[in-house]
Image (cartoon, rainbow, N blue to C red):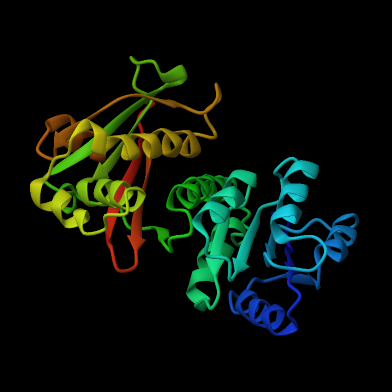
Length: 295
């Protein structure tokens, strides 16, 4: 992102444009530029001379639909400009087509300010002179994209949190080991996903939110139930290792491990860097995910 946070709002309702603009302004970006268009054609003209950090578009608009506009943006600009929807469209097949076309998020109207702010601050983080901070923001945005695709419109937040202690994890946790080209040894990094986070990923993808508490209570899961978590963990590790000189790391293997496992405690204390996140889905629950760089 440049030193100026740039947004493009595309909606045929002036009222909705004003609401979105107000939410963006409430984020208190030090330097901000917002442009608006009432239809996709006007937005395309703006994009010829203006490169926003994020496009927020409606779905149902005259002449060119928001979905067609999304496809145009992603293809024309090679997915370099993030784009998301604020829409009344609720058909899950259509929403899934938006994600497949390259959309980063889909928020249903009416929406809460917090719903939009989650994506604003993830995809357009505050600029920083610290290179490491910029890389962390890029990594978090990448993980947010993966989750948005998996959750298919379900509201959620993923926020950095203070470093977790061993006692903060569930009794059993899914541990993933990462290596270059998916090969170990050596183990370049590991990820820890507590059982509540595993349950959230599986339950949402199988439309069974009540199962989250079962995961937490039982402390284990079948291989089929772990598939969604492993899929995310692989993408999570790749997103968190963008700075690896030989390319993003890949998941080599994973297993359920007790928090009493000695090597787990050692990795939490002795490492080359770590990042802890809290995954929260309103009305479902919250869980923690940790990424630890070992070499």
